[in-house]
Image (cartoon, rainbow, N blue to C red):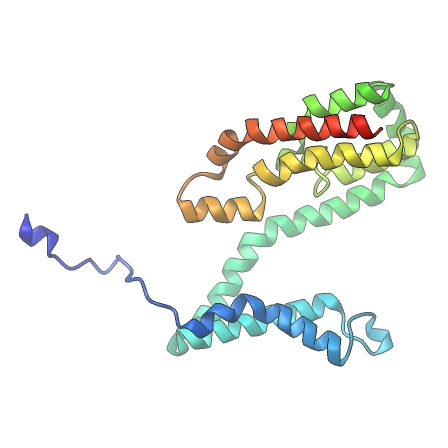
Length: 232
């Protein structure tokens, strides 16, 4: 037994390396690059001699990644940097296509032809009273999960546009309802980056975390809906 415990780990076991303190500033570098560009050249329309904010952010991320790779593993900097780019694209590709789809959905739902088709459908589905809509949102709050119809970072943007065009609810009340279900989505949705990262760090499944957190997030959503009803 003693020999077994004293054996060296196999080649497949990665030895934990201590990072230099200078590497801890890496997450701040993209913000520093954006702030520097904004201070020197300015962020805005490139035709006006300024730098596009998205381009400034991409440059900041690239510089931060190169800095971290050179600092942590200078002999493998190129492999580490290119590998990080590939893994990063693979991780966010689904989200990028999702937001492209959201943009197309919002554009489509603002067209007059789509409004004329969808308005009767939404009118038939949605309750006609304020409190009816409030209860409808409360009971179906989990529809905000997985970028569903109540998720303002998903299909909810198009649904909100349709409901706004119906003009039977105050915009402030509609905003409060979507904010209420958005609270549930922000905490429990397993597709959120922070939930995925935390679950991965803890070594658990993000869906299992959602099931544990959902009752409490739903209860908080109910309280927010009550608050909306009081303000209304």
